[in-house]
Image (cartoon, rainbow, N blue to C red; front, top):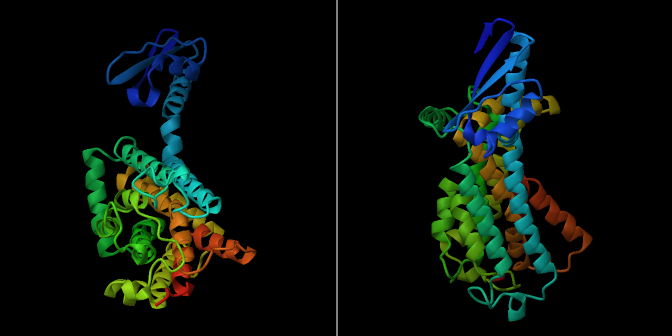
Length: 364
């Protein structure tokens, strides 16, 4: 609001206290510069009164600078930075596990390495702490800082869910979000196919509640199991004859990998083609990202789904390594092994489905 009075013009800006932090006066002074009078009020909001002798335009410009400075941290997260942050956290936790695997003769090799001191000899303490940190951070962020947590946002999410479940590919919903949302149904199938072959007599928690829950809640449900499960990556640790019917005949089948890969390819073409599967290009991918931005910045479902996708991607590497080693792969880390491992992990969804298609069968 701008008011003109005499030789001075005033702009009044209401800024949420959560946006400016614990010392709003400092932020406001920095944002507006010298020569401006600023008055702040404590409480749930800070009312900044910006006065300028240069007329309405200067007052408006100063108030715009104030809002930009106050909203900068949140804007950075809402513009796509949040998935990168949480994907990177998951990647760091996974990298620590891979480093430990590369520099340890085996999980039973000894208590001095930290295995025996935390829920038994087959579990590395660093993995448990790292994944739990990622999981707790994900929950805290999603229910504290994610956009669209008000009533209007909840109603918008409800309408979006109904739309995406009924007619997801009609082009009226962001194609890129449709691809991300449906990929969150493929990721749990990938994890099921790589975790359940090593799930027999797991302790201290059984796998099925967590793997099953991941089809609805993604990393929110799966991460605790990834943190607590026992290592089953020794060659021959699991036999095909010991698997249950579904794991042996469906999850272990290369056809399962082929079907998941076909779904992943379809979603990738649809998403990056911005709804046009035959017109995939850099321009269409950029347009798809821009088209998803309004939803990503305003709706909790879209925002948290993208973050969840990146966390599932980041946590997959050690699961891939373990599944490969119990089948005799990724043991000597030849150049071929390194390149194939990188391909299967670095390309989200598509890489893991390639692994499921071509991985060696378990020993009988």
